[in-house]
Image (cartoon, rainbow, N blue to C red):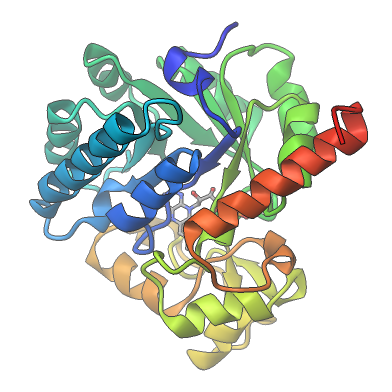
Length: 319
Ligand SMILES: Cc1cc2nc3c(=O)[nH]c(=O)nc-3n(C[C@H](O)[C@H](O)[C@H](O)COP(=O)(O)O)c2cc1C
């Protein structure tokens, strides 16, 4: 199946994934101008009315950039909607996405036909994130256009499946747009995701260590200084299993190697969640590849160089 036009014209097969609290219009704009899909959760705009201003800033800045760079326009942007019952802003945030005809909506923690229909109504594309094949089927049945396979080692809420297993199972029956998420932080890994059958690499943690990210300097430096040994998988902080930086857990007075399980009924994406994610730093296992805090454009430029070098090495293209 050909990719929807909005996803087919990307100069690099990368989606900068939404990061709770951290993503903001400056990061989204920098990602899009560098040639990768930039995204942010609608919930990062607080109060809710701020989303209107942020969407205006993103759409106006990118339109001006495209007018000045007709030969190399920006990549499209995406807004992430948490489709969970604890998100009482969904309707209001969807109305703003409709107002700005957001090109790509990324849905998480619930697939809903009415949300997908609404996005299609303004000509947008829905990518839904899943951690297993059963959720993938359900998402497509409910009308999502594409899937984000969140494999083991992803930052934030992550699955437990090998990326090979997930992509192989999904590609048995689904030939639509497919992104792979989890520990991708180098251009070679982006090419590997494509070689496995994904269309896009979905990259989050690598963008925490950028100038534009709305994270503390200590958090950014911790991403630079850490590697996969410093990541722990726990359900304690939001009720859903995710990956976190151990140093932040130690700083909160807990032992990251002996954490209790959480009560899933306490799952919450409201105000308390913001506090939890601010103190406890979400992060994927792939950060061994990140060695400095740099502007997002520089991170993308390096991914592009590595991607092209990997293609040249493996596919005999150029050099
Ligand atoms: C700090 C942090 C916050 C995140 N917040 C969200 C979010 O609000 N919504 C969402 O769909 N995914 C969220 N994610 C998951 C990412 O979108 C993505 O799946 C993940 O970062 C990819 O793995 P990687 O970090 O190893 O690149 C978050 C990840 C991190 C690290």
